[in-house]
Image (cartoon, rainbow, N blue to C red):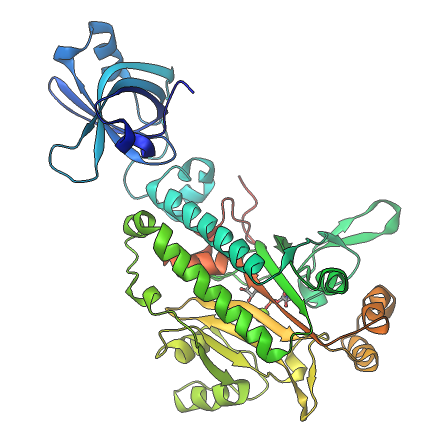
Length: 431
Ligand code: 4AD
Ligand code: MG
């Protein structure tokens, strides 16, 4: 390799090296220019002194513009005043591509302009930090799940049937077979796979034709569905708690610089430890009514309700055992109270909203048939799913984690559209 990454500067102090990257910013004071270079790993200062450069190199230093691609050779030096900061004393600078009229200035722009230029906006420090945190969350998630003996199996995106109700399905023409629907969750498929591998998960994009224009909804987002044979509701809660705790710890350990860039106060994250707070749905409704919400039993929680329930909790809050009437067909009916199901929503503190939805699954073919009918779903589409119960059906449970919701909470980002590389919402399909 004939160039090095700036993150490796500490190992190269005093050596002459070459780096490649982009000019983020330039400040000049007379015969000295300070070039801020982004190479994907760090933002590094390269100092160019006219006196020690040949005239043609100095000319290029003067000419180089914001976001030009550059190759710079120089000597790595410790910053004269700051610990753990390194810079490059420039000997040579090549302009690999001269960028002209870069549209994003280093000042505040409105969200529409930035979204329109999302392909360039990604280069900002803030977006870099969010992308890195997103990656850390994925790494932590894979780590924890394997540690708990889950393997990744994945599920299809083109599907013939709904998982989460028919109102948010995206249909696409599918040759002579009519319509396919973009998957809302791979859950039903990984439920089939547990009879092969015991515990498994999928991770991929899912689609919801959500009409909601909120700071928490995307029409395309990434979901991790996990499923485990022989797990009951309590086992399910335990894995969710362990997973979220592990993700938070991993980010605290690996993303310090990112949190600093985002000005994310991590004191609250440090307190995220098991056990999480738990309320039954019924308890939640009582608490909400006592705290000014006019929610009625049998209604879904709104944003404000989630805010009230998490206000006094430093740890995420489980809301469990919801009324059957407002939850999907596959959730297991509580034998002690047939009006409710063994499920949970996990709400993150600090206005994080719902990050996980999970449940023990119904094993009874008869109850499933009745519920599929009641939801007005086409029975023929679910015959294969019923087979998973007919042939060696066992108690099992699982959950789905919305990646961007978790990124939003952990990074302390206001709007979910910054938590995915290229956001898709009702009003946005570009770039
Ligand atoms: O609660 P949901 O709808 O659950 C399921 O889809 C189950 N089949 C998952 C399972 O049991 N395997 O979605 C799971 C999570 C939510 O808790 C939320 O974090 C996220 O997906 N989510 C969204 N994220 C962004 N934009 C949207 N429109 C979302 N809808 C759900
Ligand atoms: Mg949900």
